[in-house]
Image (cartoon, rainbow, N blue to C red):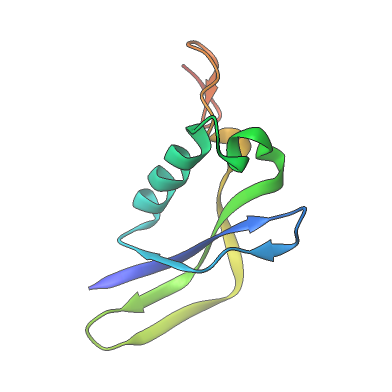
Length: 94
């Protein structure tokens, strides 16, 4: 089974969080959105500072990696936060 390798990048700290292995980009985005919606998380308090990046894939059966030359941004914290009903969610009006 192929999984994806993702990490959150902290622009202010100029550092990636530890790499996380998950089932798919969609699952990674959902997990990131959940963290961003938590009012106590730094992603919610400082959304301009964080983005979710994908590094590539890993095949769990063969242990082979398919890594990108550079990380690609999957989601921005600013687009993951639901402030109030009717406001922007993932770049679209609710």
